[in-house]
Length: 92
Image (cartoon, rainbow, N blue to C red):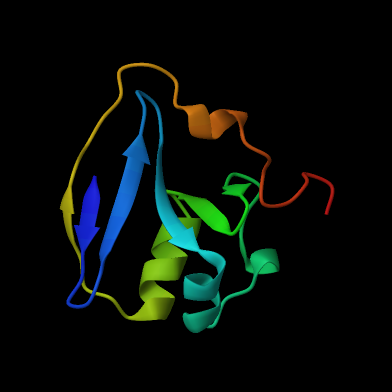
């Protein structure tokens, strides 16, 4: 999925069972959020975050105040995002 806003385009990544919204750490901070606000189901690669679709992505979108239009792009296999480190450990 691609999410378009007035001033930027955001990318949704999905596989047969889940989806993630790609945002940068600076974008997260601009929305007034920090990493500890996120669940254990989001992933990170450097300064790029992949926010899971059920809690973290809606939290970000609501906090950022962005109205979005989406276009879905779906993979038919498990996504490589699942191989990345999680934003936070299950025990944090």
